[in-house]
Length: 124
Image 1: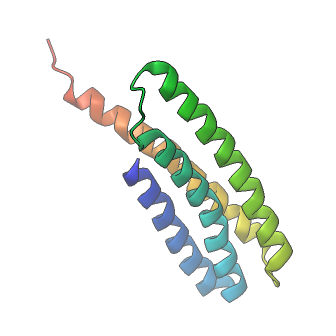
Image 2 (image 1 turned 180 degrees about the vertical axis):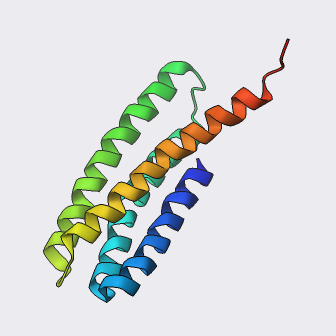
């Protein structure tokens, strides 16, 4: 989980630097805000799943996952609302590019984990 969050933040910083260099500071900070709009809600979900629970059973884990996903969605909507309401000027395409790039890192993390698990399985 931590590796995926770190890679999401890292790709956001790299993308922000690239956009800053090619299109100026507005595109740079917009891309960074877009990636943070993905990373912060994902960190909330990861925290919900990683915190110890009084009940270690499957039902408690599912409840934590549902609450985490609902909170993640609410935080994402809240963060986009705050960015659109308070940040002027903003580059919308860079904002969404940062968000999408960070989201794609989730899939890359899952793919890399699957590849690693396949490498770790004993061959017959």
